[in-house]
Image (cartoon, rainbow, N blue to C red; front, top):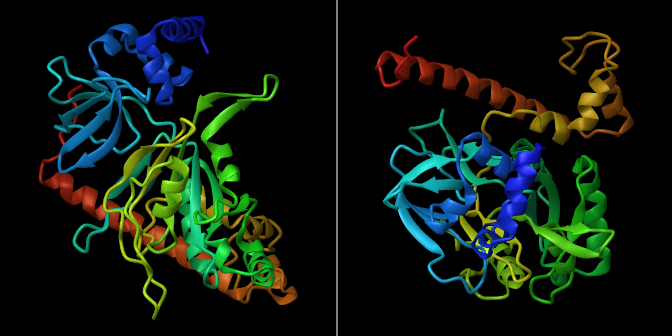
Length: 376
């Protein structure tokens, strides 16, 4: 961090208006970028041109220009003309407060494949600048290990810290919880495992710990963090958000008795203020987890298998019937399940197919002349 960046952030904190940005999660990384781009936080704050995207509705963005709870005039609604934005993005608004001029770089992004039958080679970022992804499952049913693996890949690829959370623990007894832990342990890949009940409040303090950076020397919270909730409909995300935020801002719905599938109660991602001052991005319940290009997500979510591959005799081992295959040896010992290995292979194949689709899509896009080549 440069001295200029430290000075820019320090100067900002001495002004009441800049404190509004700090309450939204402003940090030194963003201060550095503003300085490099010759922007001044004080003037941007005075003119309400610096803010964070809290919601997107058909080409319009709702921008929070203040994170202070009782701030007046702390919201702007502007157009997304020519700007690719996601909930959680930090943006600079045009002088006339009509549209987004610039999107600051992201520290992380929860990105999946666009949910369309006709468009399969385009990405959709549902949350940006998040510190932790809470992968939420319902403890009222047997854990779907294959779905957990997929959601962990998505969370790892975001660049944020994944945490697996089982909600509705009030609906299970101690023996049921113990059995569930034993079943889920083989797919954790080093990810923290938490239990909570939005109904009784159990475990909520453990979740709140991820919404602030704490100064251990002073034993005080020093900076608000942003968490994102990821999970299927019916796992209780909206109820959990209401408990964490301290108000009933999210609609909730019951699950169907026949298949325990939930009804969609969240239809758009939204940045929600939490009761302790941290921030949370709720994402719509996903019926299917459609992955985008995996950076290292598959490798991290299946780290046990990737570690074993280093001991295989052949570099191009497919982990099927090759001699001296360390992965198959682990399967025979019971250290790795066949289902887990098969799911990893399926996700790798899915990624390769997506890369081919994207290459075809990009070539067609270029032929139409939609993507202009830069002039030398």
